[in-house]
Length: 363
Ligand SMILES: NC(=O)c1ccc[n+]([C@@H]2O[C@H](COP(=O)([O-])OP(=O)(O)OC[C@H]3O[C@@H](n4cnc5c(N)ncnc54)[C@H](O)[C@@H]3O)[C@@H](O)[C@H]2O)c1
Ligand SMILES: CC(C)[C@H](C(=O)O)[C@@H](O)C(=O)O
Ligand SMILES: [Mg+2]
Image (cartoon, protein in one colour):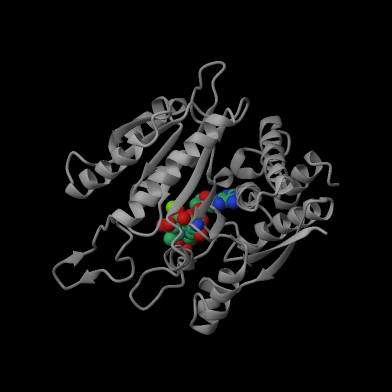
């Protein structure tokens, strides 16, 4: 009998539902033709539109669905027009990261041969690195609870030993897996601002302690400002980089820019038990409802989900399907014939997803 895995689906706001539907359809088809696993999906309402209707952005029932599921597939959330009373935007993804302690925000950046990129990449090189953004503390610690008076505003940056140790262990383990599978040289770069802030000297100290436990892997440091420069000038030199929450938020959009846009940038927020998979981009209200959204970042996030589930549950079929799905997207992008407008093409959401399904021989 095939093992069944339950997936919580947060279809989100704006273009969210438009990119979720074809992604879930591909996952259903992959599972249907696999001997090794099955998937079932449960919708979990949440987000800005839900808040506008009900006054709740992440209902307890949806949180419960997330907790009991094997993985959480989450689309873009938030709308600039819908805000809490304090003026901040509805962002259940931040609540989920905190509630489920999803400390490792994994944001891969890949540019394969023939992929459109604003960079000039030397012949024979590809970009393939992973940015790990701590996702529960850092400068997001007081998010929604910052102190604001008439004359000043304060937020707190928090770095804890507990989370940092888990984060760095995760980063080195990922670098080792990448080395073993031929995707990287086995190097972790700690991105910080230890030249100015004691909090980052503390962060770096814990990084060095973890690095010492992995003599088979290389470790180095870079300041965050210089990292922005090197990500543009020599991005192929990075393997795994690990950083604080806000730095990672900003640098991951820079990484998405290297890939030719947010429409190709997937992410995973991973903890010791749970994980959320979602595209890095937002709800794109400017193109919502028009069938123009690029579904590939969402599909790539679903591929990461299959790979994570496959490794966690020792399910080789699911791991292989995750890799196959990622490679199918990469093939469609490299071919460059069927691309959405954000990538310079003229295809719609449905055509783009159909191209991936075709590359997988699903249709
Ligand atoms: N992870 C998330 O859920 C997430 C991330 C960023 C922003 N947001 C929220 O989304 C809303 C809109 O934010 P924003 O406009 O700053 O960022 P955005 O990512 O929604 O859009 C930025 C630009 O990229 C384009 N774009 C984004 N995703 C695309 C896709 N899949 N296909 C084609 N084009 C795409 C948009 O059309 C827009 O021009 C805000 O409420 C914001 O808070 C959510
Ligand atoms: C929309 C926002 C809350 C979110 C974040 O800041 O984490 C987004 O920018 C991201 O990168 O996932
Ligand atoms: Mg962001």
